[in-house]
Length: 152
Image (cartoon, rainbow, N blue to C red; front, top):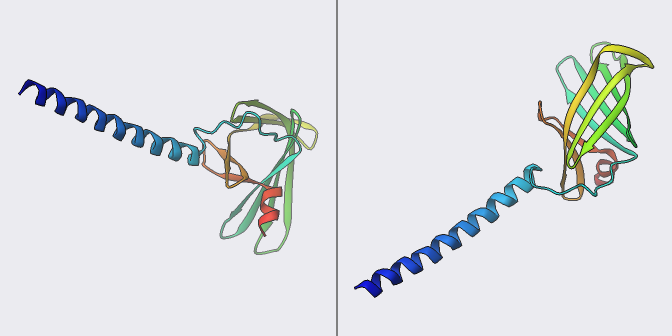
């Protein structure tokens, strides 16, 4: 009786360990898809341009982030649907990168200091060989323009 109980306990432990391993693999794959568990420290984002397009009822907003070394340019372009006019804001500043996190601080609007800089905290992710920056606050996804133009 004792041998049967130890045998059941042994095989039950093996089954539980196998289930945990499978569950852990599934969670790792899900985290990689969300960008949380990716290791992109060696991914070069120098000279990259990321694009975000938002369509509203009355206007279309196109935003660009251009990264050159530690410097960054953040451009907002607003297209009014009623009048067809476009207006833009060009911010410049710097970025700091820690592993997969990119922090943008744009403190100059057309080369004039602004009292409240534009700041963005972005998570660098890669899916299907396409680089994305995901805004951690708004969940907006910025796509690498080179990747986007290849897919068309």
